[in-house]
Length: 324
Ligand code: DGY
Image 1 (cartoon, rainbow, N blue to C red):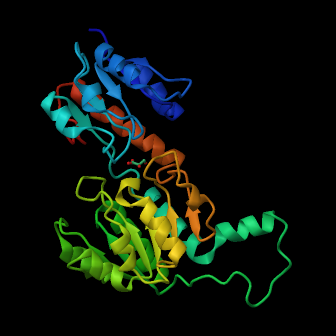
Image 2 (image 1 turned 120 degrees about the horizontal axis):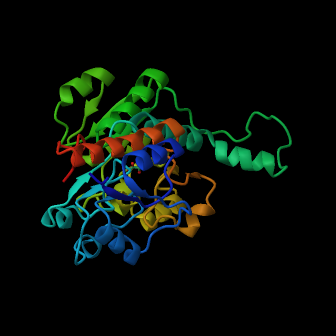
Image 3 (image 1 turned 45 degrees about the vertical axis):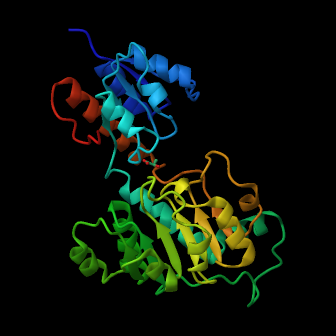
C-alpha cells in the first residue's frame, strides 16, 4: 500500500522531519519560506495531510478549494486560531493540535517576561552593552519586587496553572484569577491558595501583574482594551504569552504612554511579525519574538504529537488531540 502523502509547511526540528519522511511520502519545506494562499490551496489539492502551523492562515478560501484531497490538518501548535474551525467542520476535515508538551516552556516564558519587565533586565542589558554603566549606586535602575506580589490570571487552563504553580511555589506570589469555563475551580483554589474572581475587573483591580492565558476567539478579541487598562493599577504590569488579538495594542500603547500601567512583557502581537512601532521605543516594555514553546525538546515534542495524530488518523483510529 502506498504511503499517505503529506506536506510540512515550514521547517520542523530535524528528528521530527526524519520521522515524517520515514512514515509518509513527505514534502518538506527545506527553505522554510512561508506558503502563500495559492501554495496552501495547492497543498490541500495534492496531499492527504497538511501539517501546518500557527502562522499558516487556513481560511475557508484555503480549506474549501475545489478538488481537495487533504483529509486532515495536523497543526503544529496548541493554539489553532489560524484555522477556520467552522469551515474545517463544514468540509468534514479533521483538525488536531499539540497540547501539554509546551505547557511548562510557555509558562517559563511568562515568568521570564514577568521578571524581566519588573526588574528592568532588558533595559539594564541595553544600558550596559551601550557603554552607559558608570557603576553601582543605591538608586540605579530600581525596579519592582516580584516575590510576594499578587499575580492576576485571565484564563486558568493548563499553561496558566503552570504559571500559577511557579509563581506560588517559587515566588510566594498570591494568585487571583478569572475563568468562567474552568471545570474544577476548587482543586485550583486549593493547589495555589488562589482566589477565584467573578469578573475580569475584580482580577485587574489590585493585581501587581496580570498574565493573559485565554485562547484567541471572537469573545476574547481585545479583551484588554482602554477600559480594562484603566481598571489596572499604575504600578501593575501586563504579561501576554497567549495571543496578540487578546490585547488592543493601540490601547496598550496609550496606557503605557499615560502611565495607566507600569509596563508590559509581550511574546505575542496583534499583527505578527509586525510590532507596533511605539512599543519598540519604550523602555518599560519587554518584547520577545513568540518564543513561548521555543525549546528544542518542546518543539520536538510538538512535532511528534503531530506525527502521532496523523499516524492514528491514517490507521483508522481517533487522533488523540482532535479539535475538529
Ligand atoms: C502555540 O502552540 O499555540 C504557540 O503559540 C506556539 O508555540
